[in-house]
Length: 200
Image (cartoon, helix red, strand yellow):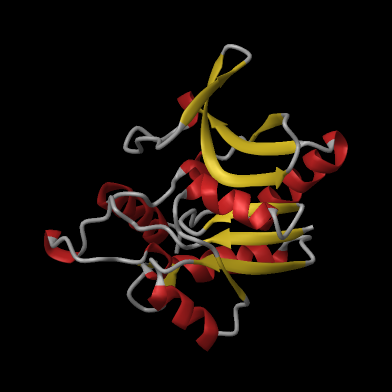
């Protein structure tokens, strides 16, 4: 099983420094204390490397030229996708890789054990697996970007999935609320930076 880190989005909900509407590439945003901040992409790659995946690629698009350049400098293998949207890019990747772990580049509190757990769930069921958190576990300051209902419970997608060509899928419910923190907005970034600093 390989992992593909999705880092080709437009970051349209990030306003940029000082409220300016300049283009920001989320994967390159830094978290952590002033002494040793780390880019989002490096945090995610670190967890992926410590997991049981055989290999990984960073998916980039025409929207993220700086991310692509950074990946080349630090020797992260990349794959270019059309950049037409999340689902379109996943279908493009599925045409090349019949199954993989998809990981969003903007989930800073991802751990290797999260990745291993969702792979184990796939090996048990052999269908696509959607990582999720119960809605009521989310920190109050976080507004989820996507939620869905399963067996009468509201769940929030958390940016890690096993993607296959299967028409069926199951949710895999994590019990770590920090995994639900996706850096989609400036408010999300403030929360992630606050938590990251406190954990140092």
